[in-house]
Length: 193
Image 1: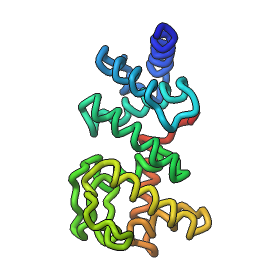
Image 2: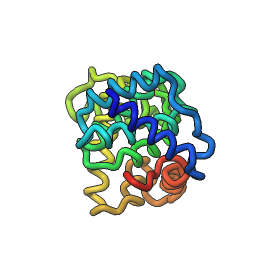
Image 3: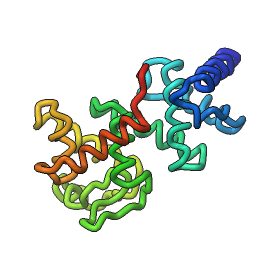
């Protein structure tokens, strides 16, 4: 526990002096610190505890404008990290996609009928023989959204621009992909990840 506290303190000091994070200089609250400690101990997709701690704290600060509740924010980040890693995607990319698709509203519904965080179309449930699944369920939505994005990335032989356009259903337009890349660069890209 002393090691985790020391690492959190050291990371907070780095965040405080980083010009890129000038707006995020607040140290985590005691509640957030406790939640982070539990989240780190319960990680399933991080290779080591230090990586988990640094990533979760960093992304938690970035996600706070969208998800105010510490517990919900950390649960969402752990699930995003797990599902994106499972699909061999960068979790920061998935965060950017979610920002553009739903602004982290797990109950979002698009005009086309796409649902949840990653705006998955309901026809996918019928396609895979699971029409009873709930696309508003965070885990279901993230699992399906990450799997679909990975499929399109493979189909496009690693071309992220085309994969994102396919994911959005806008193959011949760069409007959507530009929004995702802008969100990635502005908020989610991390130097040491």
